[in-house]
Amino acid sequence: MMNMGGPSTVPEVHDFLKNLFMDGDLIPLPFQRFLAPLIAKRRTPRIEQQYTDIGGGSPILRYTQLQGEGMCALLDEMNPESAPHKSYVAFRYARPMTDETARQMKADGVKRAVAFTQYPQYSCSTTGSSLNELYRKGKAGELGDVEWSVIDRWGTHPGFVESVAQRIEAALQKFDPSKRNEAVLLFSAHSLPMSVVNRGDPYILEVSASVSSVMERLGNRNPYRLVWQSQVGPSAWMGMQTSEALKGLARLGKKEVVLVPIAFTSDHIETLYELDLEYAKEGEELGMEIHRAESLNDSPVFIKTLADIVSQHLKEYTSGKVGPTSVQLGLRCPGCTNATCGQQKSWLARAGQ
Ligand SMILES: C=CC1=C(C)c2cc3[nH]c(cc4nc(cc5[nH]c(cc1n2)c(C)c5CCC(=O)O)C(CCC(=O)O)=C4C)c(C)c3C=C
Ligand code: FES
Ligand SMILES: [Fe+2]
Image 1: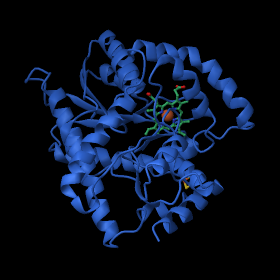
Image 2 (image 1 turned 90 degrees about the horizontal axis):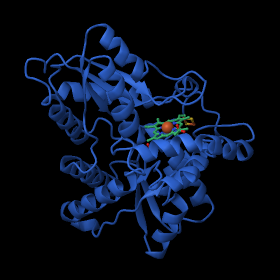
Image 3 (image 1 turned 120 degrees about the vertical axis):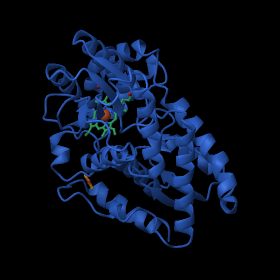
C-alpha cells in the first residue's frame, strides 16, 4: 500500500519534510541535496505546530494498517486461490519507507506482490514518485525476486464513489432540512503546480472524473464546485483556491457548505488542520455553516472497496486479461523530461513476464 505517509509524532516532522523536499520527482530543485535540508529545516517549526494542533501527529499509518488488515481478511475469503494475503505499507516520506518494507518482504519470502497506490487519482508527483522509488529499489536489487503488478488508479471505482457519497450524505444530514438541498458541495483536493499541470499530468482530469461520478451517484441534487488547496511556495498553482472559494460563496450569499476531501482517503494535516481549523474558523467569521464530509478512514464500505479492487485485479492479471499495469500508466506525460519515468514504465511493463 503505497502513499506519501506522514509523521506519526511531532519529532518526526523534520525527517518527513526533509524526505519530501529531497524528492526530485515531486519538487525538482537545483542543488537538491544541499537545498532540501535547508528548506526542510526552515519549514519545520510551522509544520510541527500544525501537527501539534491536530493532536500530535498524522493518523495515516494507523489507518493504512487498519485498512490493509481489513482488506486482506476479506481477500482471503474472496480469492482463496491466492490466499493468504498480507498487506505491507510503503510510504514515500515517513516510516515505513520502501526500502524498509522491501527488506521485510524479502525476509518473509514474498514472491508475488501488487503495488497498490492509495492515491485514488494518478499524478506523477504522487503515485508516479512512489513507482519511481520502487523502480530504483528494484534496479538496485533490494526487492528480491518478486513478480510485481500495479494498481495505479481507481478514482472512479463504484465502491470509492459510493464511500465518498455516503460521507457527503452524512454531512448533509447536519443541516436543517429546509437548507439541505441548497448546501454547496465544495470538493477540495491538494493543488498541483501549473508547471506539473502543463506538462500533461493526468491528476486534474482524474480528480474531476471522481467528482462527476460522485455527483451522479448523488443524483445531482446539490450545486457543487471542485477547488484546490495547500499551495506551497511562490509559483503558480492550479486554482481556484479553497479558501478563496469559501469567501466568494459567502459574498454571494451561499452560506451552507459541505467540504469534501476527494484526493485522500484518510485524515491528514490538510483535512484536520486546513479544512477543520483554518477554513471552519474563516467560515464562522463569514457567518457560514460549514460541515466537512468525514475522510474514508475506517469506513467499512471503503475497506470492502479496497478488497474489491485488488480481487478484480488479481483475477484479471492471473487470467492474462490485463497486464502488470494499466494501459494508461504506459504513456508518459507529453511534457515529461524525467528519464526515470521512462525507465520505471518499461521496468514495470516487463515485471510480470
Ligand atoms: C493527492 C495529493 C497530493 C498531491 C497531488 C500533492 C502534490 C504536491 N505536494 C507538494 C508539496 C508539499 N506537499 C506537502 C504535504 C502533503 N501533500 C499531500 C498530498 C499531495 N501532494 C499530503 C497528504 C500532505 C501532508 C501530509 C499530511 O500528513 O497531512 C508538503 C509538506 C507540508 C508543508 O510544508 O506545507 C509539501 C511541501 C508539491 C510540490 C506537489 C506537486 C508537485
Ligand atoms: S512527469 Fe509524467 S511521466 Fe514523467
Ligand atoms: Fe503535497
